Image 1 (cartoon, rainbow, N blue to C red):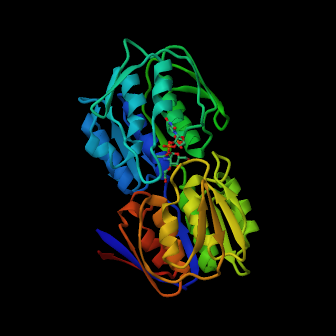
Image 2: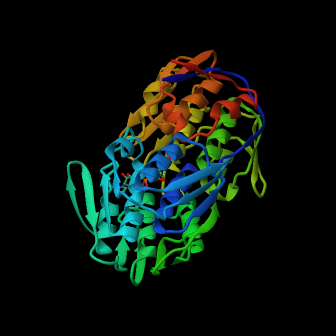
Length: 418
Ligand code: EPZ
């Protein structure tokens, strides 16, 4: 396993080009299963999770070709409908093949994802929604065995929680269902808008992009299409928060400021200067870091995927910050590691009370999950001394060339064999 070694204290100066969004690439790649004609995706990031998705799609018989960040996926010859535990256990988003396989072939056998560091990650909303479209399923030996007699039938589906993955699964299934599907309390994340653009480009009839009620008029078949993956708003936010922590003057390019409404406002309150362009963001921090409160919420609220990162910033604040995690039940794994760097954080149920101390010291720390590892990198960039972050395979899941990007803007960071 590899580790990352960081000597903290270097402000970040220069430009970082943001990659395509992991959480858009995964569902849009799964959507290739819906058509016998190839789809082409551009601005695809090179991540462990996109490589895992390619392996999963290959196991169904999908052929693919990648040139730079352009990926063509051909699902004309599907010869398997089982998503094996070995693949699914490394990436929960594999469950997103359920809807497309059922819509295209009428059956699917997908391993239950199992939990991960941040929570149990159930898929009940996915299964309840698919049942409303006529899918029968049983759970056996850790697998979901699902099938539908004939074609999926449109229906009205209401989600108790605006689940991102469940909204994506049902959108893909409903696109080929017979009749109309209405999804109520749908998630509104920009990645869902990206999926809607691809599906409509393939001939689907989906209305309501960006709203919490989506209308799908099922069609007989979907044809090939081309679609660009949107910029990764979580990668963008991660680098913005890093400048907040260690200072500097960073310009992010190929990004979309519109996709970070809450973060931009909160970072300005925390003392950062932010200049928004059409597809650029310039961020600096010269004054003190102000301690403010955060509550994670579904989009357009503050993203749960930036909670660990913002906590690293708040450990350096000028007072008390209360950070409340409302989306996942166990997303404070980074707290124990930040403690090792001198952070003062007290967990009280779903809230973490952070007493800003203005400084952190380097230490040996361990990544536990994707965004926790990003939090530790941010803390290490600002800490006095050397930090070793182990188990960086977590980081590789969602950050394309993080060490290279940070090195090029002045960070003292390298990757080593553990
Ligand atoms: C997506 O996960 C993202 N992953 C997550 O990003 C992100 O944190 C999450 O949305 C919330 O924004 C991808 O897009 C690949 P949910 P997803 O369904 O779809 C509960 C990262 O770091 N729930 O919106 O799994 C669930 O347990 C990852 O990039 C059910 O109870 O999230 C959670 O508490 C981490 N039953 C809440 O809803 C279900 O059937 C929101 O989950 C589904 C979800």
